[in-house]
Length: 450
Image (tube, rainbow, N blue to C red; front, side):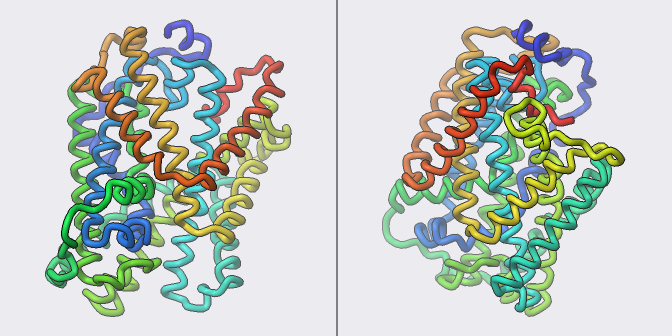
C-alpha cells in the first residue's frame, strides 16, 4: 500500500490534524445525507405504493445496510493512506481498471442525481406557480435554474462553496417543524398495517429506491485522517448519525402517511401536501420553500464537484481535450461545467425522478459492493498505511460479508432495462479507457479535483 500511496503522490495521514470529534462527525454525516430525496420519497409508488403502512420497514432495512457499508468504508480508509474515498480503496485493492470503473460510477451517481433532484425542484416550484407545471414551463424553469448554478460555479470555487454552506443551514428547520406539529394531526387508521408482513421482494425494491435518501454518508468519512481517535469515533459517529437519520426519515414517513393516508401514494410533493393539511396554505409554501432551498444548495454543491470528473477525463485523454479547458480569468473548468449542466437539463426534462434515482442508486450499490470487497481483502493483506491508527470494525470479516449479501439482495430487484443503462455506460467507459491506456497519465487520478 505504501508504494501505491507514493505513486499517487499521497503524503500519508500522519501530517493531518485530528480535530474532528464524535459529534462533529455525526453532524457532518447528517448534513451530507439529508438532502432533497426525502421531500419526495414518502409518496413514491415504489415505496408506499408497494408497502402501504409498512413502508417504514424499508427505511430501517436500508439504514442497516448503509450502516454495514460505511463501517467497511471506514476500515478500508484506515488501511489506504489516500484521500479520495471509495475509488481509491478499490483501486488500491483490485487495480487501476476496476478503480477507474468505480470512478465512472461515482460520476454517474452525480450525473443522474443532479437532474433527479432538479426535477423535484421543478415540481416544488410548480406547486407554488402552477404555470411551471407545463412541459414548456418546466423546461424553461430548469434552464434558468441550471443557468444560474452554472454561472455561479464558473465564477469560481469560493462562490459555489460559500453558497452551498449558506443554503445548507435551512434544510432541517421545516422538516422538524412538520414533525413537531404534524404528529398531532396523524390519524391512526392511516397507519394500520395489513395482516401479515410485506413480501421480502417488495421491501428490497423499496430499499433500492431509498438508497438515494441515505447515500452520502460515505462522503463524510473521506477525511478520516482528521478524526480524533478514529478507532472509537468513527463507529460511534456512524451509528449515532444513522440512528438520527433513520428516526427523522421514519418519523416523516409516519407523519405523511398518518396525515394523508391513501392520498400519499403518487404525490410528487408529499411533505408539502401534508404540511398544507397540518398548517393550511402557508404550510405548503413553507415546505416547498424549504425544499427548494435544500435542493438548490444540493444542486450547487454537486455542480461544483461533478464536472471536475469530465475535466479530468479530458485532461487524461479519455474525452476530447476541450473538456479540460480552464477559464483564463476564473480558473475553473468552464467547458466541463457547461457540458455537465446541459446533460443534467436534458435528463431532468426527459426522465422521471424514480428512473434517475434507480440508476444513481444501483451505481452507488455497486460502489458499496466494491468497498465491502476491498475492506475484506485489505483486512487480510494490508496493514495500516497511515499514522498507525487502525480502525477495526465490530464483527470483523463478518461485516463485509453481510454487507455484500445485503447489497446483492437489493440488486436482485433491479430490472433488465435498468441494468442495460449501467452496462452501456461502463462499456463506453471501458472502450475509452483502453484507447487512452497508452498515454502515460495516471488515468485513475482523474477524480482528484483541481
